Length: 407
Image 1 (cartoon, rainbow, N blue to C red):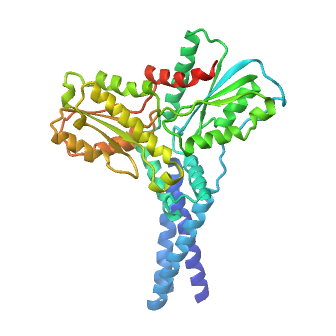
Image 2 (image 1 turned 90 degrees about the horizontal axis):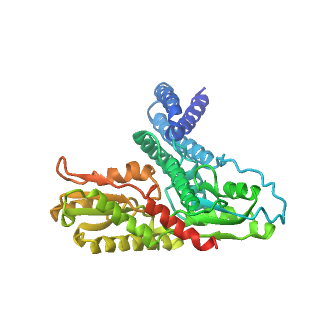
Image 3 (image 1 turned 120 degrees about the horizontal axis):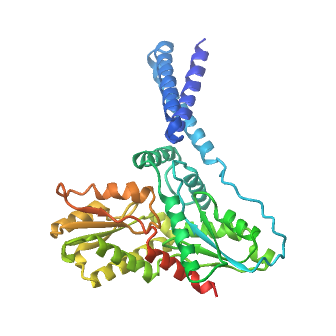
């Protein structure tokens, strides 16, 4: 009988680890069920430890429970991380060697974020870094990361990322149509949402494109641009069909995009003199370990924002009231810089999610929360100028990257 108690403890503790990971990572509609199940199993485990063991054996049973909880926790975490990407990729029906119908296709490629909580993008990211040997969040802690992501969604309700990029590609197409281009077709694609870049490229091929231009709507060259390029390159389009595939590169060197920050700031300062306005450009940030693999991510993000600060200073803002900050991994954090601005006597604060192409959880929740941690007076004007979004200047910057390949 005593061996049965030990077996029950081991099974309950392992099940508890599995259920707890599920609670941390499932869709919000399933949270209540898994929380209830976790509490029930924990209660039963406590009862079994109390009535089935005494003194030393109880201590050993508790240690066994902790060990089996970790086993269950790790096992369920690994199962989640092996989840297949469910996004549909259409069948490529175009015959090899088919030259197409003569028109150009623009595959608008950007990061992407599901409208509601779905961890598949981060699951793919974790697996990619594990394959590359890049350290990022220990296995045991990853369910807590998913939980934090879910909590961010619950705070803001939904991400506007997909909706905003749909508006942006519509504006881009309208700009070309206004210039008399009636043949180029435009296809939206996302690394972490539907449709994927390879799915968009396949659709373009099936619809007869004779040239594909991949518009990389990112700020920097990074693992994200590499991932999207890799998906499309795996289709072997040039070798199979003899048609060119061009990549525009991201927008870190776009002076037009830089000018948007000045124009938007000027439109939002109101009656406050520029010398009394603080402007903070908040970047995303990546771990130092990633810099060894993708140094362009940080170098280009810093370089781009410094150029924007120089433009702002040239436009009349005081350099001491202009600064960079980081959302994650790097210093300084936003609140620190805001408090320095306040010591300088600013009367209004503007901040941008400077590396975000379109509003997302980071710009809707994470970065504002970091800014609001600063100790500023009640009623002090703090204006979130968000991500790039569907600004005519942003659309022009994207178009300028595409245009050289349209010839």
